[in-house]
Length: 178
Ligand code: IMP
Image 1 (cartoon, rainbow, N blue to C red):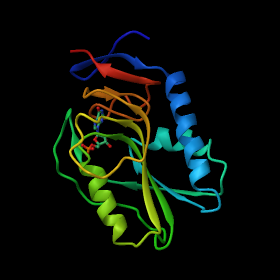
Image 2 (image 1 turned 180 degrees about the horizontal axis):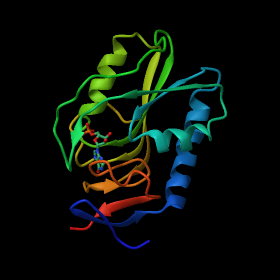
Image 3 (image 1 turned 135 degrees about the vertical axis):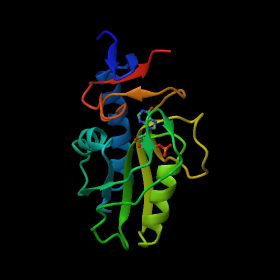
Image 4 (image 1 turned 90 degrees about the vertical axis):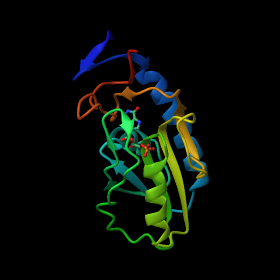
């Protein structure tokens, strides 16, 4: 694949679909071991996590449930640090083993907010699984338990990730051309 123009920015291929697939295999294997007999509730964070959620849960062999929530925290290419509400949390969380599925953890503002809201519902446990993690941008102490791929602090699109609405459909991960 060559470079792709999305609005004002150009992106180049960075992580292939195959590499993503292998990394997701590994996360799924860990989760299958960890949640045997625990009927985990996977909570995908929309919009970005639709791809990761679909790819991950088809590799999950233990009995599980999956639902989605929506937050709004990010506009353009720099995290605003502002997080809106958690929409769509209708399942009973109390006593459940919850796995939050994120497309990418950047500063950690979003995941911190989600963890705080979930804690109010008294789950048995909560862990976080992220398709991508930017350790150099992360500002929180909350451990990101399961990471498919760690990336440097660059803006990326593809496989659910967007630049102002565009690029979610692109296979693999592309990074901004500096
Ligand atoms: P955080 O709250 O700073 O951790 O950012 C989390 C959210 O910001 C993610 O769920 C994405 O929607 C968005 N985000 C962070 N980094 C990127 C990126 O490189 N590309 C696209 N979206 C991003």
